[in-house]
Amino acid sequence: HAMEPCAEPPLFTFGVIADVQYADIDDGANYTRTRARYYRNSVRLLRRACRAWSEEDVRPRFVLQLGDVIDGHNVKHGASERALETVLRELDGCPAEVHHVWGNHEFYNFSRDALLASALNSARLGDGRLAPPGDMYVYHFSPAPCFRLVVLDAYDVSIIGRDETSEKYEEAASIMKEHNSNPDLNHPPVTHGLEQRFVKFNGGFSQDQLQWLDEVLSLADTNQEKVIVVSHLPVHPSSTDPICLAWNHSTVLSILHSHSCVVCFIAGHDHDGGYHQDELGLHYLTLEGVIETPPHSDAYGTVYVYKDHMFLKGRGRIEDRVLRYPDHVNG
Image 1 (cartoon, one colour):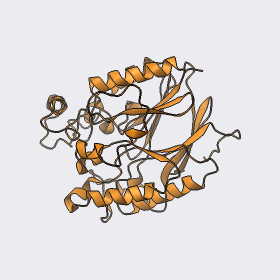
Image 2: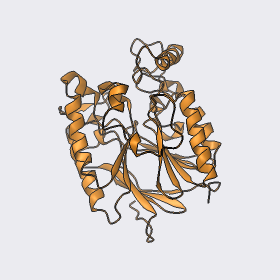
Image 3: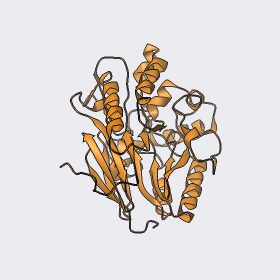
Image 4: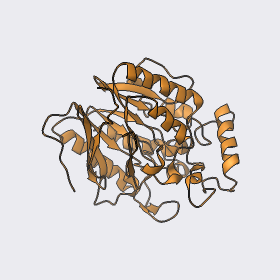
């Protein structure tokens, strides 16, 4: 059921796209061999998205790239740099600045230090206030008056996103040891339920990061802003398959709930996508992945932001959605 944005002009719009996972290799399948993956075609779908954003009546203020922009398969072909150049060249065709979120495939291809020094580090576009501690990849910015976006680092505490000598790696290893005894840690410890999330391709948010998030949201409360929080990993169990959930998702939820500014949480990672609105009215949107989108379809969207709601205009397998702001939210 296609919907159209309302007649009044939006305050601003932004593009969204997730899990491009480009590699110059033949089509394959996912880990459980239940979904086709179109590795070469993904860059064509990215190009189509950038072209569409360029042609829209209202030029997007920015584009949100939700992580896993190139695939881990690039590593064994020695093609990580080349694949990244290919997708960045397409993104250069975007009509607006691109904000990059880091997913598990970024960390299969590059070390944290390499990512921090790369074009995938868009933290320079952030607001200088409340600089985060350490080398976590988080920042916030205001695309328009009374609105703020916060980018989180879901692999801050993880096995793949941290050097083996670091404390955060140790922390991740002990979390995994406690929950998953499989020889292959990408294999979930159980066949159903939330415990499935304790796999190597997921991660968590450090205490430092959560404290930083809390401070940024307090500032937004004070300034009567509406906030969209983004991360590669979903944080609400009803917005994703549990195997794709952030390890300490419930702690994040309690922080989001303790503020009056948050309207929406946007994630990728689960290629089937997902959506949930919780009892407080917050929206949790998980975007369908480009990598598992057939060549004849699409997977991107444009979010139209208004004073009392947002409208996601989806393309291809992304559904249109009206996201009304929760009643308790500022303004």
